[in-house]
Length: 124
Image (cartoon, rainbow, N blue to C red; front, side):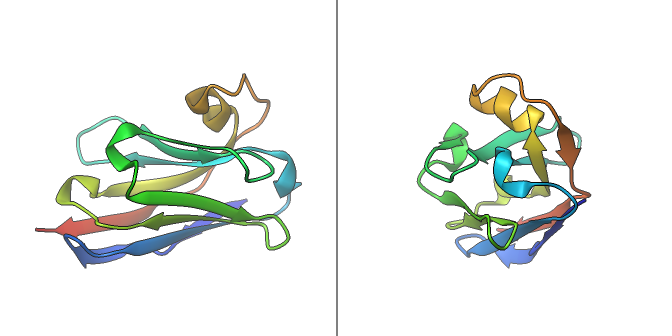
């Protein structure tokens, strides 16, 4: 099970941290990542972190503003979002293994796990 939290309503330029807690699986074995889906748009990749936390990938639109991290002991992944923009408004999803590995160019992966999403709204 994967559960996201931390979404909310903020103003442009503000910061927000999303969390993703994984239960029931060996968290530390899998690459983890974040995707988002804005209204009337397709889901898109945002960021990925490998199993050890020493390799990360970001989509161009968030580079320099977002950071991704994980704490394997606490089975938790984070997305720190700074300098938020209205175009960052979306439902943010936590994902594990296959979709993350594919988006980051890390191979095929095995499992496919998604959270239920958390809404981030950035007002102008």
